[in-house]
Image (cartoon, rainbow, N blue to C red):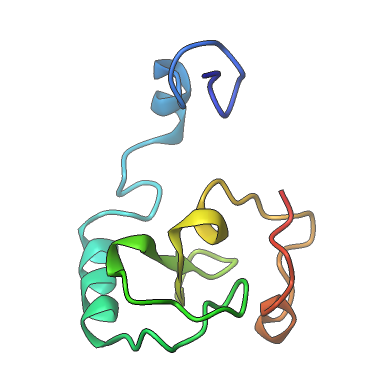
Length: 108
């Protein structure tokens, strides 16, 4: 499997790219994020909609992620881990208004 960032053979992320990405806290996934995710999962309704694809979240909380908004300063809500949050890349100009995101395919 090639590195997802640079394409070098090896693991999903080579050591060099992993270092460039920073720590979980530097990337916005530190203890504050983990606590917010736990709180969101404790009160979520499986019938709630994923804000990226518009489908219901489902019964398996381990298959969900807490997603940041475009500015990474706030949380947008729970999303499916795959494919809605896995390897997403923000398109030029951002995702647009949240009302435009629901039901819009995630550009990759």
